[in-house]
Image (cartoon, rainbow, N blue to C red):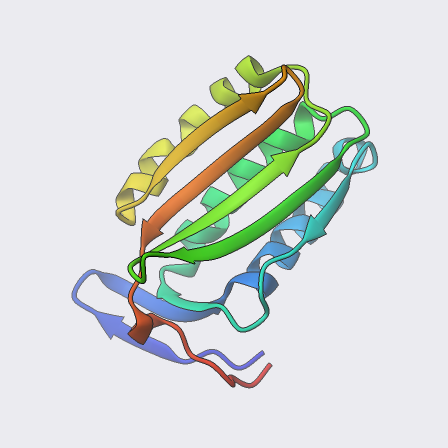
Length: 153
């Protein structure tokens, strides 16, 4: 993957393809916690052309924390990761587990990454439907200039 670095006043930023970043997080989790990832299947539905200009390490940590919280409390579920642009100025990454019975434990696990999400101007949200489907969302500011289509992988 070819990444274009740009240094700004707020630190080192890199053009990061979100699909690939999610793949890297899933790979890291499967290597570091195979007992967790073996129980569930992670499906990466993030568009391959969605690229943001951000601090890669911070986003890796936030997405890693989201996935770890969901996977650690999953019961043989299909965990779906998706991302979409909202209103042209926000991106929302969603991690959804269709077989989660312990949303409270997920919420507690997310507390450690809340400051990281806020560091990039974002926030976390957790929802539970029918006491089984849990969705964690990370929304953050985004501008069209952040996205680069047709990048080299």
